[in-house]
Image 1 (cartoon, rainbow, N blue to C red):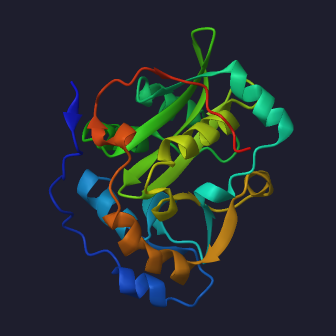
Image 2: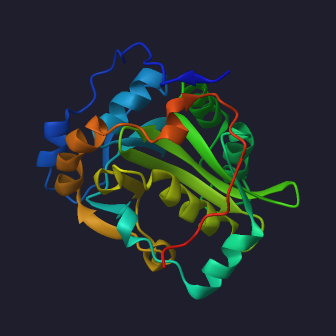
Image 3: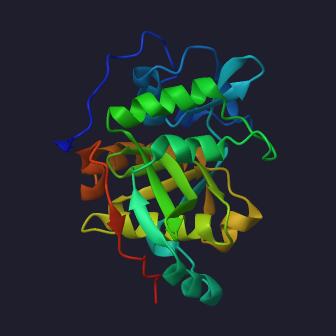
Length: 244
């Protein structure tokens, strides 16, 4: 199946914090609400308000970091060694989405939080055309990748993993390349929280208010072509060329 555009699910019945409320918060707390569900309409409503879900005990926590980790497309840093690694992988998009999510949720990983309910929820979003995987393959074997939610010019990254050195980094470079079209200046990759590792790749922190206030323009930007084709079973792509 190769259909155009994601399907808008039924709206959420839950009353999530409005975007204006999220932007106005001045507290350093990153957890803003607890409860609701992981239905597609709820997830999309949350992302459109600057929220994302992670478990909080036995319930769903809705988070919006006071300092948001983001990657501007022109801010990606590719080291010399990573540039050499780019030639070692094949990039595919949306060919094994569920496998990527499963690997990201490996319970042996530190801080693992992706359980069966999360896998099912994002699988539903994927089949509606909103969630996508960027995969790194080597010798016909899946060795790394990332997944997230694409809404207009926003790519809300959820998780990434690797079984071979640099495989997840190459997936991120490939993602930036896929987003780097005529609307590149109007796109942003949200990584939720920055880490020292992500900072070496160009991820920076911006205040919650700045992130949320940018959302209307991001959401109004057209989807990149590669994510506008719903459930296309995308094939191999050329190896990503790092910024010169």
